[in-house]
Length: 206
Image (cartoon, rainbow, N blue to C red; front, top):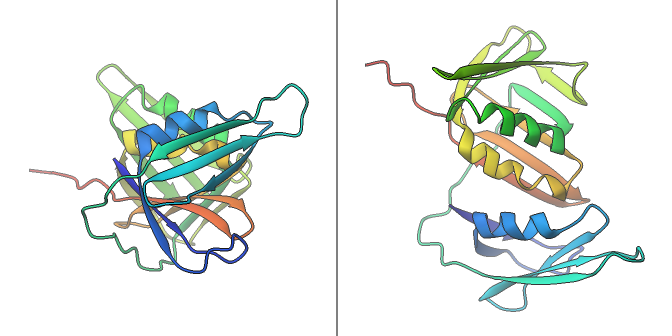
């Protein structure tokens, strides 16, 4: 899987839009090296590699500097139209990652049902099942459009890969609308945001 990473600057000193092709598996390995005591700076001086600086002011925490090669993106950039989502969830990013990891033990598909200020995540197979109900008391924010019920499914493998970036921000936002890609968003710092989109699975009833 490739990640198309856009950098549009103001505070970072970037004057124009830049697009980077990144291998998600390699990026996951790099981010796992960063500890909670370190800050992350991502930058690039050329079109061949991306650089990661993991630094800390705490004594005994070693600064680490990593590089990864960039990839050529040979597909058209996916355009996601601005969407008013019917379901908005904000929760601890590490907690969401743990939840997805647990659900992935039972099936390759994550089924989501949203209705009446509650969201249900479900994964099941012949080997077992797991069902999790999330209410407004369990997360920082849960908003479901009144009288709206949504039932949709996604490939849990890809959501799990998105969740590997939980170290970028303490919380994440999940936005859901029927028959539209799910959006997973990390507000890193100020104007810096990382968004992931995943198209829903198409049910085959034949």
